[in-house]
Image 1 (cartoon, rainbow, N blue to C red):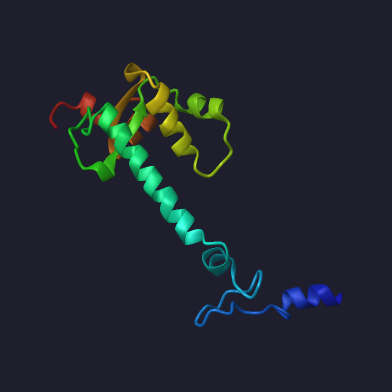
Image 2 (cartoon, rainbow, N blue to C red):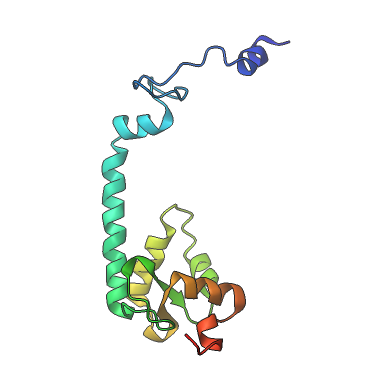
Length: 145
């Protein structure tokens, strides 16, 4: 057996992360990937800034389109989302072609800046998923809600 394959198979030469209690293998400068990002490049600070930016954009969206599900009346912000009324969200995202992990922030900003109020509505996640899967929410077909 070739020596490199032997090393890979038997985990020889892999060092552990230098953080006490972390059993992951080291990937660079003595740290595993998550600790490297946290301690070496300030990932936590960038993450918190992105998270805050996302919350601010989301709040602006809900301020613009309403803070209540138009289908069932849900009003908890954590459950609300913005829906493309004409089910053209895929083409909207495709037109942006960002290829980044924070695509939704770019889409949200585009909706805030350029969105026609008639193309979007506020739905809770349950109603949005039901609309996506079944064509319409059960609240629309079943008036016993």
